Length: 114
Length: 115
Picture 1 (cartoon, rainbow over the protein chains, first blue to last red):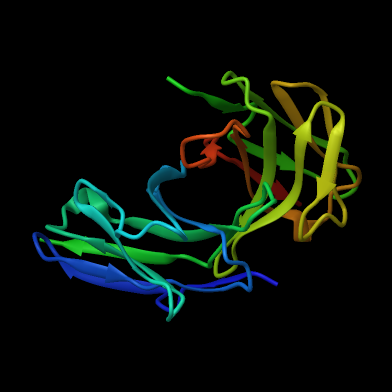
Picture 2: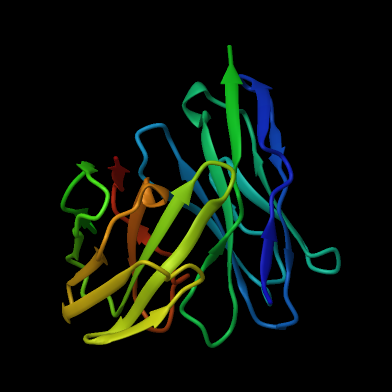
């Protein structure tokens, strides 16, 4: 069975610093996709970044990058130069092959302070 | 702009009531999903649909049913609401077309309180 684990319930970071949010996954599939979503206090889920299991390079989207370590089954989100608006819940998710379902981790609440 | 719209942001219902949560997407997406979100548990899949009139159980379908009569609309039904169904409900959709990341697009959520 597939599983996503986020071990950090909460994280603090100072504005302009970088922060890493951890995500490990468990799957026996060779083909899968990994996603990160942001959920601000307003509640909407915002897609941030995607990494395919066969992608050789780590995905990047602006200040977001995904540190993909396939052998360790980890897909950590790195946010560079944190901003106050980055304060939110962050969810890691995975989709396996031949399925339409995304399974989510329990989330990490990030708080950015001045 | 792509849009997933949930009919109610906040609902308060009584135990035993029948509850309908409606979701509409305007992106012609094949797949639609219902998740519930609870603190410390993340998002858990209730049901999803990959086509009109087609549905599949997710991880926690007990106490829920769904309906998809039209491609753009996916309804979640609580036949007899119970207090343990108090939660945030999130609807999402995605395309099955090749190319792209296939990410989910979410609605704003419906916070249901069952008294």
